[in-house]
Image (cartoon, rainbow, N blue to C red; front, side, top):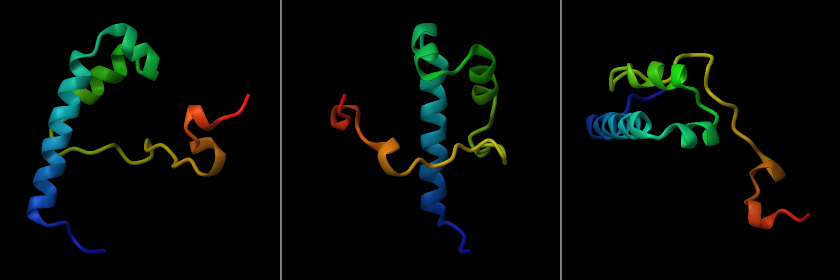
Length: 75
């Protein structure tokens, strides 16, 4: 496994900083929509920009029909 370049790492850190800032500013009703509670938001926003997702908490990638866009799903 190769190490990411400095530019790649800086972009990742910048994205984490921005997205955690957006998460911090989300209203409670939008947090409920995405299934995150205040405790989870506080834990994520307390992390430093270089800290990624803790091991064992990453979501599994969905494949197949589960990834279909809502407009493509027949009723």
